Amino acid sequence: MGDSCGKEVALPWKEKSLMKVSQEFVDACIEKQAGMTELCRRFGISRKTGYKWLGRYLSTCEVGTVRDART
Image 1 (tube, rainbow, N blue to C red):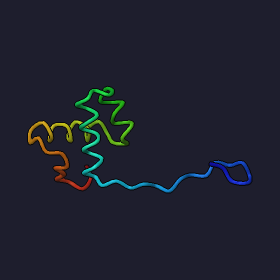
Image 2: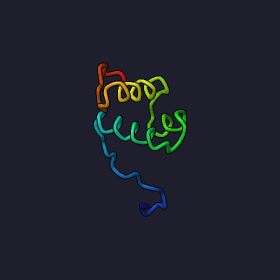
Image 3: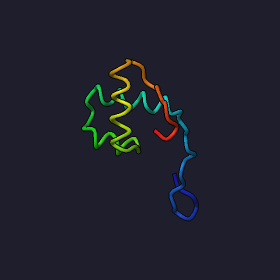
Image 4: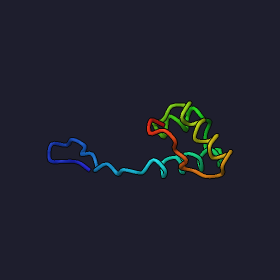
């Protein structure tokens, strides 16, 4: 997409819930789409958060178990 000046125009941001993002992240981990560092980079989270989300899923088999709003 471009405007009349030839500059690229950004599309509106599509927001996702934290639960949805954590579900997609865990799915990507389980499918081994990439290593932990790369997946965390793709999802815009720290490795600490990535390991926390994956650990919570593996211990409870539930994604979106968010105990702290900062993670």
